[in-house]
Image 1 (cartoon, rainbow, N blue to C red):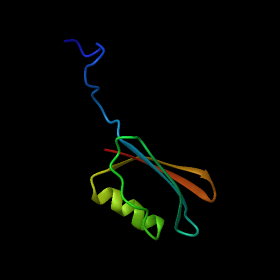
Image 2: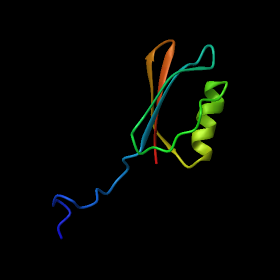
Image 3: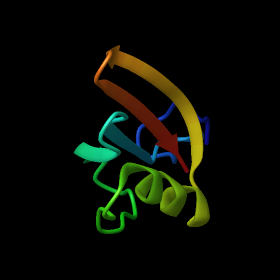
Length: 77
């Protein structure tokens, strides 16, 4: 069965968690995730939340400054 046929498994990184933080206050502003992503509750600080996702096996794909007050972290597993 060819990889491009309907019903075949997709290969690649497709489990995503997006954490948006305010770095000045060290707070999580928003947490988005794909349907299949294993997630954990938001911690009391942004740095703790980011550390938790590293500890459960996620890798940081990208960090982007949306504004001077918002940074978006994209994790994949």
